[in-house]
Amino acid sequence: MRIGFDLHGVLDSYPTKFKAIIKLLEKTDITFAIVSGPPREKIEEELTKLGFEWSDFYDIYSVVDYLYNDGVEFDETDPDNLWCDDNIWWDSKARICQQHDIDFLVDDSLKYKPAFKLTKSEFIHVSEIVGKCKE
Ligand SMILES: [Mg+2]
Image 1 (cartoon, helix red, strand yellow):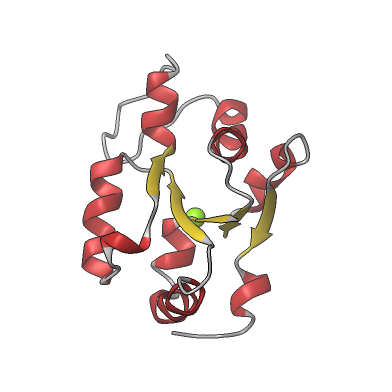
Image 2: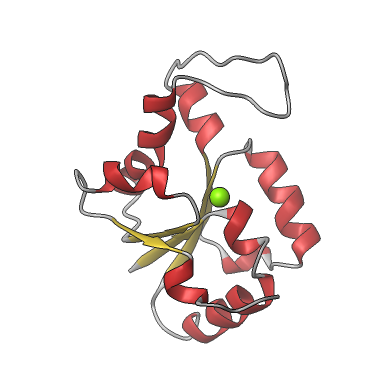
């Protein structure tokens, strides 16, 4: 089984909780991935700042990189906030999870959820895991 985590609103909002979950589950055959919007290098920088171990993750999937490789055009007016057609963007994480055999995606944005109905992957809202936990 493979579990994907979003970065913003998930790993960066609850780093202590998710580090503990990863540490516990790494004793099993479950693997972990990051599925997040920014370019891969930005995700890598942020993970390092948050103190996550590289070896904890099987791979990192960037929505921006994935869509660029697919030939999608972005509005690059603000380089720190690239954007493209909404429908393409909100379907992207379900497509990434389907392609990379990610069984569950933990994310804070429900806008990604509808596209998961068309896949064998499952969307889990972060609140289902952290409850009312505050870090
Ligand atoms: Mg998010």
